[in-house]
Length: 408
Image (tube, rainbow, N blue to C red; front, side):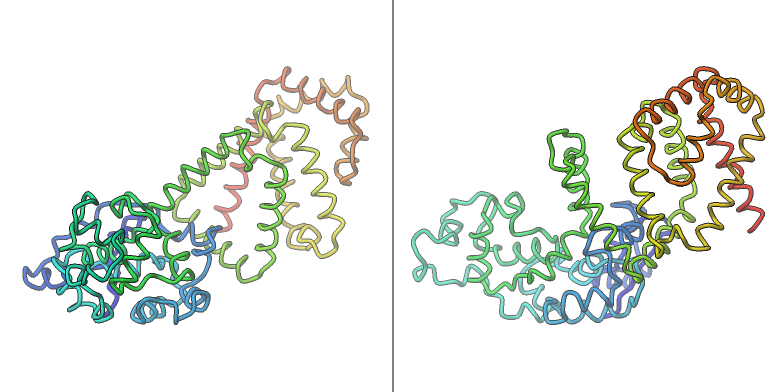
């Protein structure tokens, strides 16, 4: 059985983009594939593969080693992942759904066993001798009609459909008729339905669009809650340390850099939107970027980085890049002489500016009084020339874009 990824040209991937066996048969019978591939379930995995989510930050070959071949429910999934080599376009979730997707189209347990020999030993619930079970066993409750939504006739088949085909976690009570994970474990053990290993399920479920959606909603709610652990200094420091540690690994740094570059190249409108958002934030005097706490922290981090001889900030490549950035910044001001003139007029009332700017260039720490002095200067500049930061920021971005275009 070969993996057949079908791409619609849409920059999104749906797990159904793998043609199932039944769809292939239908396609052969009608000489066409009637499946609608235009639906969009969730954004293309590539961007996420190169960011955080531990399960997605590995190439297919790395993922096989991380999980362990013995922990896969079927070696066919291992083979399909191996064929993908280092292709990030399809995740473990996609490959699993591509292989076990036929279960959703089957009509009974016997048909499932025909297509999937690994389920040959699965016991049909209706064939279980109930007299040998404890009187409170969950299967007896189902047989007696005490559990709504399911009957013993189709129980084994429905569990396989939900667990292997629909990828519903056993902890999802809504999917399993309100039964607890403990009750489901009793059922699967009795019916000889093999459950995923922890190594496999952890990687699998975190890549599903449903999980990502729930995670996204929960994360946004946590960040919006001022009392959440997400907003504690300890959590931010822990996350910063973890991120810094991961970026020190050459293979991860290379993969993320290439992935992000490809994403921005393929989504120029999002790149432009993010750039504009950052320009607006820097121009907003009430933005966190312009808060004293942020500036102090940024200053501290810069001093540490400049003091480290092995830091990227001391590399020739970085120095060359920053030289171009400063040149673009200076040119942006020269293109707006009215702003320069207004700032010079304000500077006449601030004789210590030169000394403070020199200290900032050397990454020397400013005193609280010096910081307030600069804050007054910038506030006067904003009063004299409203929106000057926004104007210069846009011009600076435009200049860098012009330079890159000329180089290409």
